Length: 444
Image 1: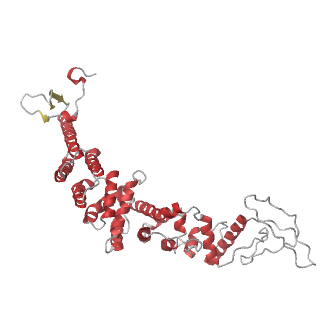
Image 2 (image 1 turned 90 degrees about the horizontal axis):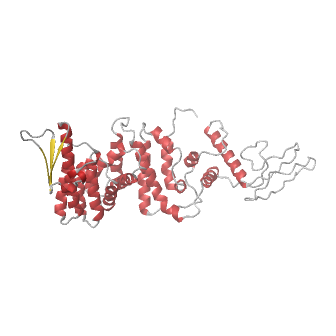
Image 3 (image 1 turned 180 degrees about the vertical axis):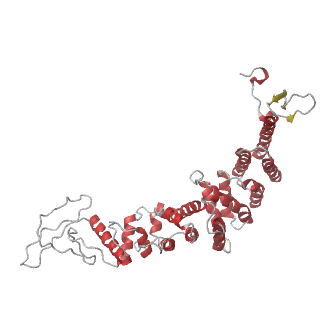
């Protein structure tokens, strides 16, 4: 336990002066602290530890002063001058610690959050002042919110190109998980949309994606592709978010499959007069042939939730023995049988053997018929522009040979909302991406 003068703590704000003892016959490795009530000498074991104490105490003293000044701004020309001095102090400090650069960014983000009525010119001046700190540091969440607002309100500002471009490039190259900081992802999304608002919008976006990949055939940054895909998926979902929230009965995945198949085969709906699928019949037949060898009827228990009346079928030839009563097939079994027949037909058309899957591949549905006639989706104009921008980015990502296998793995679970898969415009764009995944060297 400290005793005497050191029984009470000394705040950093009460330090009046801080210096190293350098005169002759002075105690070795000492730091002198001047307080209103006296002086304190701190003696270290060596010169390295003494210098570390000195710079750390000096940092604490200065950061307290800047926080006090910037928390109570009076004149914005003075505030801007203090921000530049704070950034310069952080960049020239010999200390190596994450908080050396993060503390000034948090102070400035608090300043911007508490003063939302600043002019656009003040915004740009502050962004230019803190730009050197952002070269090697991710912006904190509050600062990301400020950057997003600037991208939305001033997409054609030169700050977006000159300052935000290296920041977003660093985020895409080094970020490991957008789930831990979703505002970094939102800032990246707003930055790309700001590029899209320029005169040659999509060309600028293409150049940005190419700059992230690099001029060589292999991208040297393994995190760029997953981060870009995460940004695209979140942006595409946001386009349908309002539609999803406003519609109670959104289409199910089976409805989308069924709609694709019906439009592909151009066949009327399968009637409910079906027997058990024994023996197998050609896909074109709508009624299964009656068995000549009578067997005991096997009636499945009726389903209470979806009762389907059965229609008995009698033999039309009097000389033949009567067939056993038909088995009742509910609507879900009809749908599965229809999917099985259609899937087998699709495989035969492609020239490959049937794999015996009971459900078709949704990718095949999208390739054959991306539109679903049973659902009409109209997005707002802004959401439509966002969808077009990020769908084009997915198409650009699929054009790079080294990214294509990883992109196929990321999109294999079909990470899109059901409404997107029922939207003709989106599935038309997704059609291109899926076709790029086809490998002509692989035998089907």
